[in-house]
Length: 88
Image (tube, rainbow, N blue to C red; front, side, top):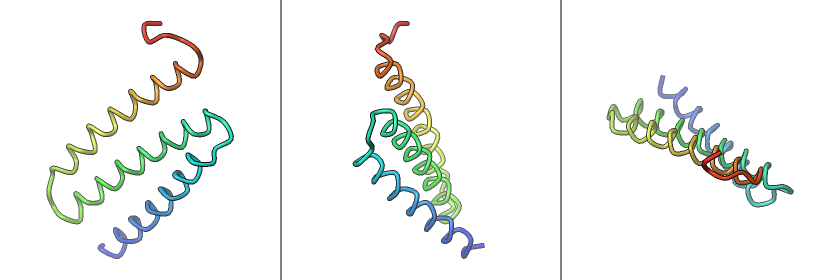
């Protein structure tokens, strides 16, 4: 089981590096927005795997809070890129 968790951590690290590359070199703002959203999802995966590895449920609380903030931030950024206000 631990081998699977460490393999999953390695995959998430590779995904995070690819997202950071896309954030830095993305040709358009929507590309960067999608990369930021995927990076947030990867971080939630890191928290879930840390919860499984350490047995502490604190990481799941962090993962849920991060997922909520990531979702709200993505919606806000998408509205901004479309030129809409936050009240529309």
